[in-house]
Length: 452
Image 1 (cartoon, rainbow, N blue to C red):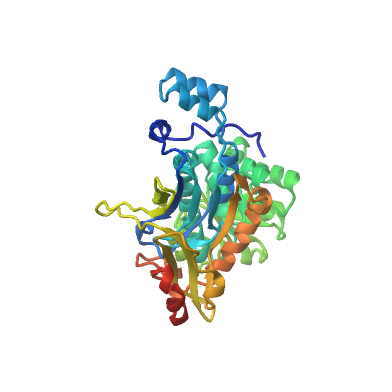
Image 2 (image 1 turned 45 degrees about the horizontal axis):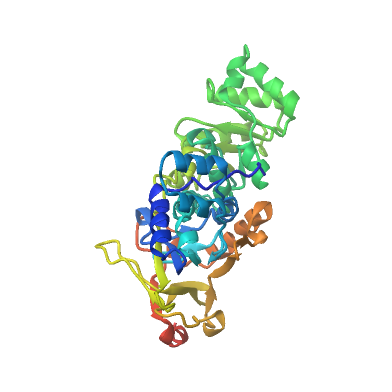
């Protein structure tokens, strides 16, 4: 992993001006519950995929105001001297619960619940949203591509279509949601993701002939490499590739043309030449729909670039971070909610379950407590799976969700969660969410669960 750096200014100014005012009026120390959720699924998709949680936990650990950050705030007169003193020793000491990374989510799912004082929790809004909105959008697109690809491997190769840091995050999110490798070496180093890649068209163009380029690549990488055969004429490229490498050539890559047609022609030619085991990889602006269209084609694997790192047309998951409960001046808990048109939120602490019928998901059950009585637990819902786990306690992340191990655990959990989807949830067409979101008061949640 790269050396840590402060993430404290990865925030919006209004978070610090609210903090400044709260320290003045005495509300900064009120205990609060903030919730991160999405009001709807983007672009008529059937489900969303939670990603970025492990990254976020590490970034919150590094959320410290050092000399440089404090100097900037002082020079820009963002907050007063008393608030600067508070920020100098700021450390998040609250708790965070939420959905496991790789979990599926639906409208209203309490993906992340942050509890602490108003002062320490409000300043995490932008950081939490920027991480989870980006990574979850990528993971959701990647999951749809993984569904379309079936058992055929997918590789992420979109770094050149994203910012340098978001490219690494996108590779991580895509891997969690079903991709098998990335071309990005920093993603491999930072997160333990398998890396792949051989040569671009520039390699062929560098040499006097295509044959010279292929011979040099074979000498360097062996016959199990993949040769890019469409720099000039694809049919001639395939013939040259087999002439140079022999029928044990590992694979060929096609990056242009009418892919279903070209793939069929290349497969027929390879078989005629005796290279029946040579694999075909296709690239060239693939998205989930193009991958689905290639399902009947003789393709062995896919490389996806722009579409996956940009969320396949939906670059943000549209999540929000809202205050849902707080203590009043007497110390009693109060559920609070925004009532704005089309932007209403539901107040209260929540517990989330996925109801199941013989292993298939039937609803997203969200139990709401208007006060702060104990919420229902998994034991109260025999036919449901509890969705929330403890991610951070007293400001310390659970290490199981961080680093290489956290990524592998998230990938494994995603595969498990996706198996629960009803068949209609795997469709690529726009429609309602795969399962409905059902709300229940804490008092009647046990009754609802027994009827589900």
